[in-house]
Length: 238
Image 1: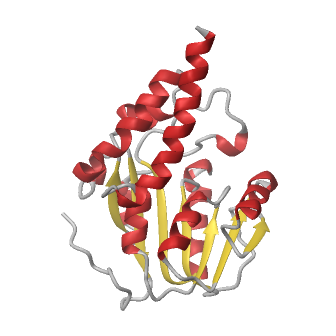
Image 2: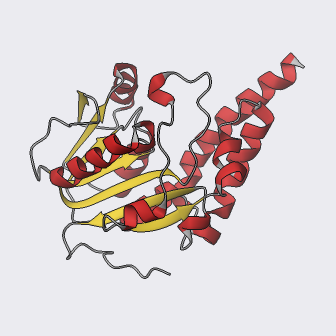
Image 3: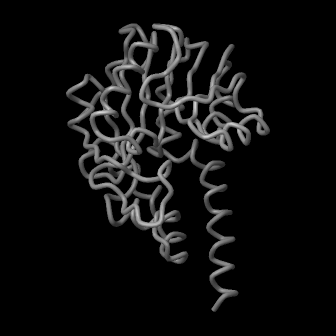
């Protein structure tokens, strides 16, 4: 039994790595959506909650940035990002108020981060991101009820639930990704290694089907164009 669990754990690690390799080419996944809708004229990017830097490792292959900065609350994550060489600079800071000047970056990226804040703090962070960005703010987060937090350390706990309507009210275009709620995120987050592996395999499959229907999705990507001349602004939405 122990050997089977170990095999499932190892398989899950490799599947997650494979997801980052294939994700940019799988229509409707979060990283695919970010790659396609990223403003090609943007030359500087602030990655809020950038962690170990996996998304930037992908974006650096697709885009020529002059400056990228990883701002994260965890020093261990920043150290891993520095080892991977995904960002030019690394800043240790909390997310509620960021130490960056107004309109200091073309693009601000914030993936799978806001749900770790209380809802009021999340809205404050969104306002701060929009102050910092010149052209675009790009977000991703789960849709709906937060994942159970039992056994999770504070930085990894989900403290708020978000819906497409929350972002649309703020002027974001919203795209769906993955299976809805229990069939997607909860499977991926399951402590059962088999269910977690199954969730990782199935989650991207649904992305093309829920792309224009984020209310039916397990997660969402939000894009706000602060510069109306940005390429991709006004993509058709159902």
